[in-house]
Image 1 (cartoon, rainbow, N blue to C red):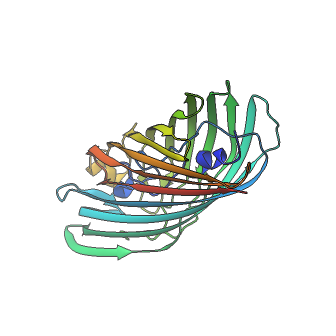
Image 2 (image 1 turned 45 degrees about the vertical axis):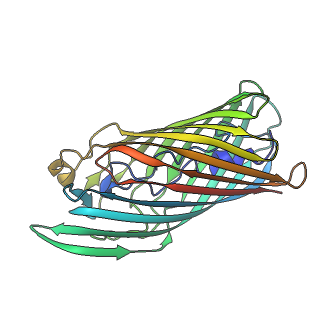
Image 3 (image 1 turned 180 degrees about the horizontal axis):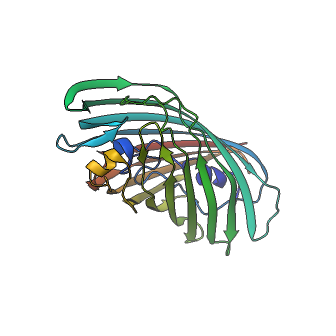
Length: 314
């Protein structure tokens, strides 16, 4: 295991600005986008690492479906999100035992755009909105990784999103969600065929605080991502990803009550591509790219997320 693996654990494990059945049909997690290669592994080599990522999400929710957004409801919602993130991770100096630890902090920049027919009381009007700026900061104080063997690994962490970005009640496109989110997650990685074939899984639950500006409480959301990847001696990797998002409980509040709790789900699947270029034993660059097609979507935006991550170990 080398330093580059930690990027896989922290760079996209908390990819925000996704879509689940929460307020505005946009939440913290994107179907199939949280997991990355080697998600169960924190490597033993200590030090600071930096990774950058990009997520494009473009989707809509049908014209007959009412969506809670900004304290009112909207129809025919179409949203596009471009999210850029820089992640800083520090691997603790704990040696090569069964356990290794890391801490991470992510600074995201978001560019959301949205169009919809917005309802205020009994009146509606077509609205276009866009924004850009820093998104809600998020971090994990401790990510712990347990190495069962050289080929089997587990990771555990609680990830926290703080409502640091600007939020204005009544807007279609906001830079932040105006809520705290706590996301305990468990990762698993198993390596086969001398490490050339990988199976990884990531499961977590997103717990949201109440948005006091709109009197809206999102229900807890369960998410599960699965990844399989075959790597070649030339540095290329080919595989696929499956994602599941299931809301565990109804949303709560006056608007949510009018929409029967707005409880939702989504599934997704798609291909994944990876490439690694090594410059020395400890210096390399990694690219990972995936595209996910969402299906069987209920009470949330349906789209096709595209996720790119670039990590550099020096």
